[in-house]
Image (cartoon, rainbow, N blue to C red; front, side):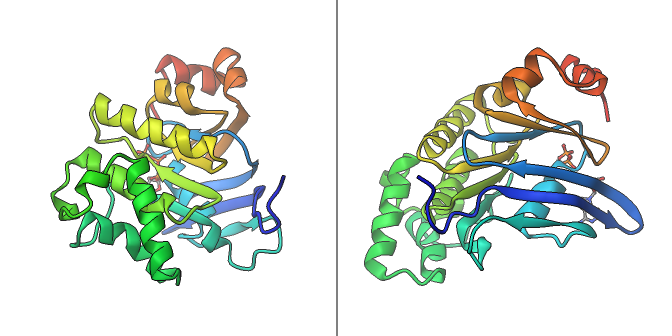
Length: 240
Ligand SMILES: Nc1ncnc2c1ncn2[C@@H]1O[C@H](COP(=O)(O)OP(=O)(O)OP(=O)(O)O)[C@@H](O)[C@H]1O
């Protein structure tokens, strides 16, 4: 059943972003529904990160708009974002996880409960007292996921969360993403890794040169690429 304060579906209408006179993203219209992860793919520079930042509200659009469903006057409280290189505080793992919960005004006992649960989810409970910045790259990314998951967002934006991770760390992060998705968190994620997109995606948003080329179910996108550009991209023949 839909939660009364749910914010999905999220809609982008005619969304555009221009910087220094250069159109980076143009006329993107799409809807993101509750359900399995949406993977945003496309060549380097296609505008994937910019799209995520616009949807999350980190960048103001130059054209068009992003709208959320429901009565939520503060959609920001229902969504979180994790970046390719997580920015961690010079504090313990646990303190990093609790920080956004404190900012959100949760009582101390609830902060402790949620942080412990999130660290257990990502396999970092035993490292709770370690300085966060001494963790390995894979551990830091898992902590960033725990910190976001502890907020229990309805939507979690992930911008290349595995870009600098080895296959083992990548598998660990993918397992966490699958668990969160299974719990009803809507994942919206960019990746350069097509095999990863096949493993995780319910649907695909394909961008090329700042334009939305296709939004399709993953099965349809990979089995019947909806455009010549999509087919070329899947063959590794679309360079930019
Ligand atoms: N805030 C900004 N101001 C100006 N230009 C920007 C800004 N953010 C991104 N760009 C430019 O917009 C283009 C698209 O960037 P974006 O990072 O969204 O691409 P991407 O598809 O995520 O690429 P990659 O796969 O290489 O990460 C790039 O040319 C980038 O340099």
